[in-house]
Image (cartoon, rainbow, N blue to C red; front, side, top):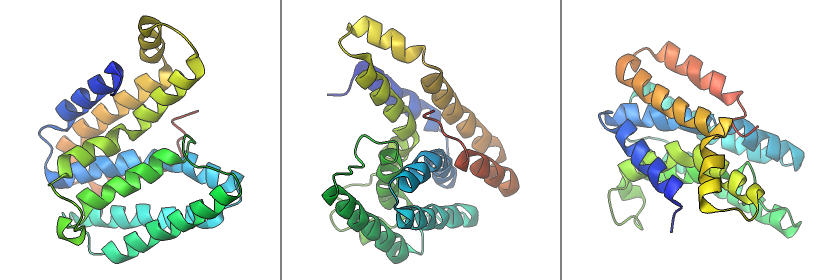
Length: 213
C-alpha cells in the first residue's frame, strides 16, 4: 500500500495533468524524464558502464524526436525496445558483480523509460498490455522523481512517527522543488507547447540538473 504522501502525490499529478492534450502530456513526460537523466548518467559513470548512458541517451532522444514531431505514436519502437533490452542485459552483468541499480539514483529513469513504452508507442505493439494505460503511465513518469525523493527521505529517517515523517518530507527542498516543477511544466505546456525552441531549452536545462542532490 502506498504511503499517504504518495497517494496525495498521485491525486495532485492527476489534477495537474487534467486538461493536457495527449501530445502535451507526452511533452510533460519528456521533461520529467529529462530531469532523471543526470543522476542516471552519473551512476553509469561511477560504475564504469558507459554503454548504459549511451543506450539511455538513445532512448531519451527517441522520445524527444517524437515529442517535437507531435506524433502520438512513435515510429522507432524496435530501436527503443532494443536499447531497453541492451540496458537490461548490462544491468544483469553488473548485478553479477554485486552492483544493483535498484534503490540507486539511476533507477527512476529506468522505470520512466519502461513506462514510456506504454504511452509513447502503439499499445498493439505490446500484446501483454491489457488496458489503455496512457494517462496512468504519464502520471507514473511525471511522479518518478518525487517518489524517489520520498523513498530516500524515508530510508534515511530511521524509526520515526508517521506525523514526523510527513513533516520531514513536506519540508524537504527537493520534494517541494520537484512538485513545483511538474506544475510549472504543465502550465507552460498548456500555454506554449507550440514553441518548440522554448520546450527544448527547458529539456536541455533539465538534462544538466540533479534533482536528487
